[in-house]
Structure formats: C-alpha cells, structure tokens
Image 1 (cartoon, helix red, strand yellow):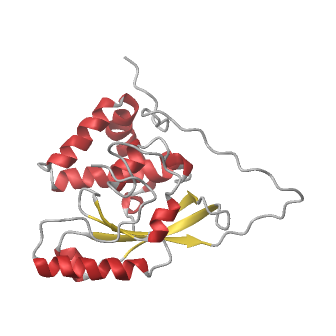
Image 2 (cartoon, rainbow, N blue to C red; image 1 turned 90 degrees about the vertical axis):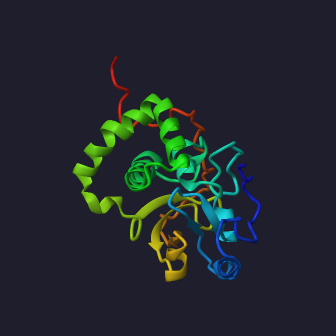
Length: 225
C-alpha cells in the first residue's frame, strides 16, 4: 500500500525482525529525526523503512501514486513517478541511470526476489525505460566508469520546494551502522549544499517543470521496430 507524501512516519515500518531489532529501529527513528538533512533507511529492494521530517519536506509537493511514492519505494519513485523530475534535477541522467544501475546490481544478487521481479516487469512494459535498461545502461557505465554507480559521495542536483534552497545540489552520504547492516538495511542522507546565486534586479517567478507520463525517459532513444 502506497503512503501519501506529507505524512511523517513516526515509527518504523513493520518488518519481520526480532523484537529487540524493532526496539532498535524505533530508537533509530528518533535519532534520524534529529538529522537536519533528508535521510532515509532502505532495504535491498529500496523499500523505505524509515524517513525523517526533512525527507518529508523535500517531497511534500509530490502527488499521489499507487506504487511509486518516495517514502514507500525510492527506486520506484525515481523511475516511475511523473513528479520525480520536479524535485530531482537532471532527473534522467543524474538519477534514473544510477538507480537503474543499482537495480541491475540488486537483481544480480537477489534475482528471485518477487518485488525486484515486479519492478523488472514494470520496466519492460515501458519501451523507453526498457531501452535505457538494456542498451543505454551498459553504454553509460562504460562511459562514466564503475564508480559512477556508487551512491556514497555522489553529488546530484535537487529542486527543493523550500525557496531558501531552491535549485541546489546534494551529496549522498551512505552511513550505515553495523546493526542496520546486519538487518539488511542501508541509510542514505541527502546533504544539501549551499549554492551561490547571482543577484537579481527583479523577482522572476520559478516555472514548475511539467509532469511527464510513464514513458518519460529520453536519454536513450526508442529502438526502431
């Protein structure tokens, strides 16, 4: 069931772990809330287990979607939500392709996982997304190198709804304590970066990027029949 954007998850999503691990996750949720930057905890499917208020604020303008809300499955959000490009700058090249690379690695390691198989079917149903996955992704990896697939340390553009940030960048910091790692989880924090903006003589209204349909990738051309 998809969660609506704008509602803070005050407790960890129910997961099949021992009671002491649930207690740890509840305390870790409190710790995460003290972090001022958007932060989330995901499993190997990119199902979101925990988020903080800063994460909710970043995606507060995202419209509803049955399967691709940012606080439900972040991979699905990046790939399939038509509003993703309104928050994730240079959405196709700087977010979609790296996430497709992460997905390919997850499939290689957990090929029998039903949720990953479902995501693979959804990719296959979108001809442009399928072309990106099968043809564009290997070319992109050869062009940028294997290190571009790593989340930790990557700097990516954001369009923050808070005008104090606006068009900015974030550095993704992957910092996962041993207990989370043992549970199969990864913590990611989007550290917002201060950007220098030129002075303006008059206020210019910010134009909202148009929503796109499900087949929104253009970084790889649709294969000819």
